[in-house]
Image (cartoon, rainbow, N blue to C red):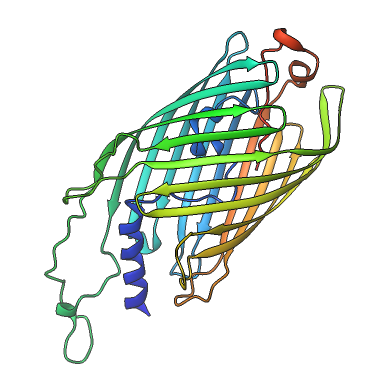
Length: 334
């Protein structure tokens, strides 16, 4: 089992060079999805989260997220910042990445808005062979007797990364396109150790059952189906979710699929979320579990997010027509 866990850790180290971490609460971390989301849900916000996944594998794979955004009151500009740290089981892989964001919002028509954003980031990562046992370390009795003579290109590397995105949205609909690692950053010393661009499409629609505004507070009952498609080299992922908002509670159910991949434990997962909002404070919990039979006991994923945001609903509901500069996107908050 120790050898199997070590091999799985090394697999994670290699895969992490190419694929980005997937959150169970993607819209809570929307600045990581698309820099064009910066400033579209609030005047300003601060968000922090912790994700533990593959918890059945020797401590699991953990990710910490943090982000902040600020929308300028007298212009169409917004700025933000992001931070993410990944850690694989037994310290087999570590990654830290931070970025600065800028977004510009404008009205194309009275009920149609455009947001364009970009992010410049800097990161470092260090794969590791920690936990692996190789043939030259084993004695005739099967005990580990010496360090391995194997060599690896596993030095710590640093890189710069560039992301960009666009969003078109109305009061109820949005569609966005984003690209991450557009500069194809080099993340290792070995040949071909580069991160390919990640292209992502996000869309959704908010169906209102009822909604009303009262005393600078917004109440609603609504349903929001969302779709997200991610492509990186030959890797493809499709995420579909349905959210139900009954102020102040949000519930969600979703499924993740890897098109074209069959008979693997990572081919499909199901996830559920619950979130509560109170006076600008938001707390959410996400749970993800693989649907297929597991050759290795990967275990479920757990994610917790805490956020504080400031929203001036008077700007959203009281100003109309061409004088209205504040337009809030209809995407979920979790």
